[in-house]
Length: 259
Ligand code: YXS
Image (tube, rainbow, N blue to C red):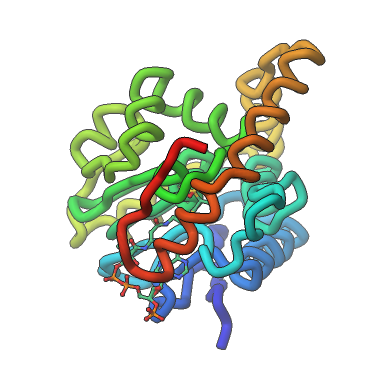
């Protein structure tokens, strides 16, 4: 069964996450299909793409497939991991990539939302980023995505609490460009995508790439880079990371020790 459904409506591509049994968890397989579908639209010069889940889902995506997170002592969210490659595919796509959100968005799936160029949500949409729930050190690229979208203080609150941000607040803080009712979200998002698709695709693509280069430009000394690597290694080599994953599967609260 296709984990990603792909269709073209006029000049708008629509990609639907299609694994509700696993709550659209970002498995390696689903991420690879999502990236391949984006590459296919890119080859067909599709100027605007909507990423959505099935209509009226309760869970847009449960985030990274925890069963497939590398076990302790291995770099989770490595540069060339499937989820990270999807995020870069979205950033580098030469056209607008728009998230249409109904239901709960968890973990790495929230990084997809804040990496998309625009996000449209309905009243059921919520957004949580959850590494602290499983003792996982997020990565610098992902943290920059959140800082760029919601600013430092809201990004810290989201990461430190791992609590879902509800639709109204998500709109207020800029996770969502528009908050529309579940009845009208499909038509609204398609119309917005159509407006963008009717503009100069070359200008949109070049302006998008300038946004990416300028917003990602955070000068980092070699020392700072090494420090980040060392800090993250300390976490993914920790008891807490191992305990966090184990607790998820044993469906119990983790007992973190801070080491
Ligand atoms: O027990 P079965 O086999 O039926 O499977 C259950 C869940 O184990 C499974 N499932 C997942 N499997 C792998 N990875 C996941 N992230 C994941 N989430 C769920 O799907 C089956 C149905 O789940 P269930 O019964 O809990 O569904 P529900 O409708 O009652 O609750 C839906 C959720 C999403 C609220 C609940 O499944 C949940 O809280 N899932 C974990 C959400 C989460 O913490 N995601 C973060 C993943 S880690 C990640 O994205 C980043 C690495 S980071 O941590 O840095 O943010």
